[in-house]
Amino acid sequence: MSGAQHIVVMGVSGAGKSTTGEALARHLGWPFIEGDAFHPAANVEKMHGGIPLNDADRDPWLHALAQELGRFEAQGQSSVMGCSSLKRAYRDILRGGAPRVRFLMVHGSREVLVARLAGRQGHFFAPELLDSQLAALEPLQPDEDGKIIDMSLSIEDQVAQALRLLDLQ
Image (cartoon, rainbow, N blue to C red; front, side):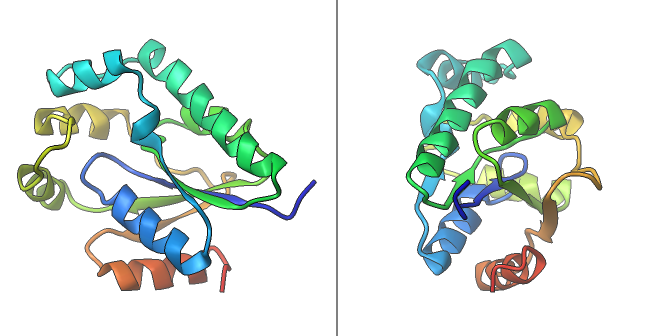
């Protein structure tokens, strides 16, 4: 087993997974994997149309992401990935991609999420899907390797908190 580890920055749409994940990856000098880029066109079309994805829609996407983690693992390369990972079953699929997959949940109030989504330009996620994501969200369990950070912190403070909580300093 390599010494690689893979941090999945998770949360609902609008939480800042990509922004936080990219900043964390930059700080660590690890590649960032944008999970949304792995969605098949049919998933993007559904979300753009305001139709929530179901587990059958997510399954091939999650397996593709697990394979991507495995690809980095095979190279001995740690990585940071942005992926909603809303349910434990989804996180279990991702954990199957590499021996050490950890989670960093970026979380905050519905009001802040709504405001962020309303200000987004050019993203395929329809803001009205937020409630379906919040309903599906299963918080990290004590036996899962992960931590929660507050999305209302500055990006710099989120990265500092992630480094401390995940013992990456």
